[in-house]
Image (cartoon, rainbow, N blue to C red; front, side, top):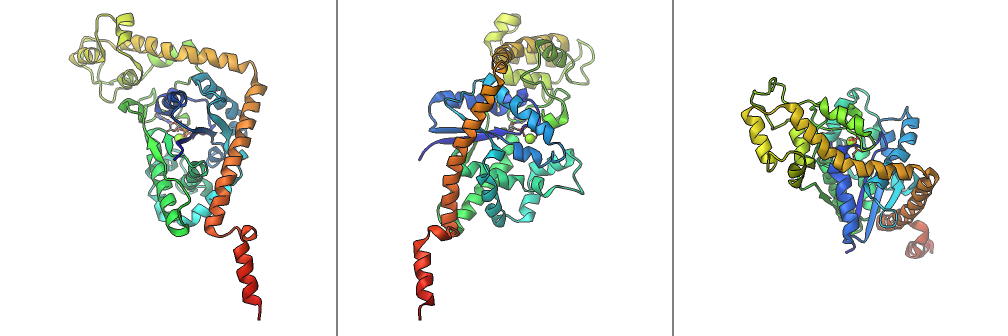
Length: 361
Ligand code: ATP
Ligand code: MG
């Protein structure tokens, strides 16, 4: 069976370091591993509109931002098909059929959607499109026959929902769709990177992000102002590393050899953590180290972005080409789905023959 990746991002803002460690970095590694037959990377504008219906301009503006972030991180159009969701109309039709296979109560149980409804104060007025976006995500994944979906932990319920739809579809209409596997980051700290404010998730909607395209100075300022352990007031105080975003970011970003370069008095992160826990290590010193570590990772990304920004029409051409290609693949899956559901009336000679027999006397 072909090994196929599908993943993507909502164009609701520029991409941040949570996206990077949760999914983007892995995608680039998988792309360059040569182990996959096809890689589809989707800019989910239609999904972004489910909670931004009154602000299409925001979505429109952010498509190019996300595309530039992709290229800056090393996604390569020669190896990965990058496309825009709304340009593949077949996805809507698939969603429409899948809606018949999911109950309202099943959607209401989705924990990610539940917390997103809370964040957006949607309680009494949830747009139907937003409520059903896990179904549309199943359409996105299955349209490309994806076997592997590299995403952050918040996407687990979406993958569960997709698998249920695949099983249900295949059992009702016969084997047609492929059941995908989620690929979560190996590093625990990357599953759900917290915000710089200490909130559980760095998220465009929560305004607590370090963006991949932030300047060196913006990154430094954000790191130096980061939430840490609120009880670690003086340098001598013992501090907590669990749940402390500065240490979680170090878990996500730092490599052992960076100690020799930037903090030679420690061998590794465990030693640094031990000192913080004992007391006698100030937040500023740890934050300066984190800044050095993160700038090392972000500087080449920022520089590559600058060079892609010089030819914006070329980026749109790349997305158009990717969208045309994606549409062809989705159309093929849709025709198989229609055949399985027996709604391919005009291609079905057997149907026409049987109906002719029926009306002969
Ligand atoms: P929004 O607030 O608009 O939902 P978002 O910041 O949650 O934006 P998405 O576009 O929904 O970003 O997510 C894109 C991908 O990035 C998904 O695979 C998601 O799991 C991953 N991701 C997003 N935020 C984080 C995070 N803080 N840590 C790890 N992975 C993340
Ligand atoms: Mg999200």
